[in-house]
Image 1: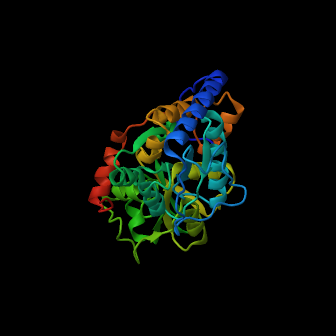
Image 2: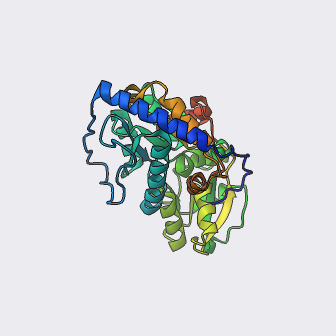
Image 3: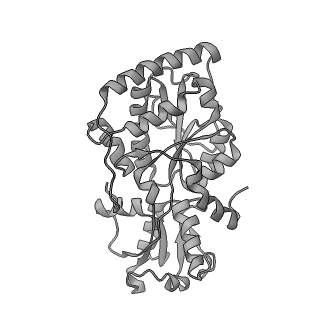
Length: 330
């Protein structure tokens, strides 16, 4: 899976670092278990039960020495299961912890379950990450992909509109238009901001805008003609184009300016259970993923990244400001 922007060089493979981290991780997990005892998270009705092949990875996955990983459901569930199942296995091997991927039904559920501590480490978009940090004091931004420093959305149209590619977004105002999720950074928040900058009312489309729920669903709705135009994140667009999965009826219309987007966010409960060094250990794991290592390369490929890089809460100040303007933050 490739991205249109250049990919920074990645770190060299480091098997010695992996063995060292695994040993430290096992020791830290044992200490946390002795100090804290087991932790059982209540099952929320807003969370789908993991499929049979989503068994916990690593030791003690039902104990206080485990991490529960989640992600906003921005793509097809089968794609997400494959991606985060692989991430759980890789992380468990590197850190010596039990790691479980827990799918959720919608964006709001990811934020809510992170707040309650039922999800420890979550792959959030920019807006949901801001929402989660506001609702969860002590949350720590761990890492982002290289492409998230220069992320973009793409506006697409059905070929029947006859529109040619353009940076002028005003022709979209007269079309039946769909976003992704209402709390998606790349599928609603930032595109709405860029439309506003060009004088297009982001909620003023004929019949009102649609909200498909995910980037893949947006492509399907525009392909079918249910909506004449829509917007989704560029990474998903490029991945589907490369895989030959985009209906020829869907045409690229415009790319947005860049902005920061997705990132990993760690909850304070996990730090309390597993030690104050957990954020650093997780950052070392993500930043150490190397395209030169076959196992690491599989993780990076599924994330559409060349590497993971450092991230800060301040990276999302623009998103926070736009979220305030659109009334999406509380």
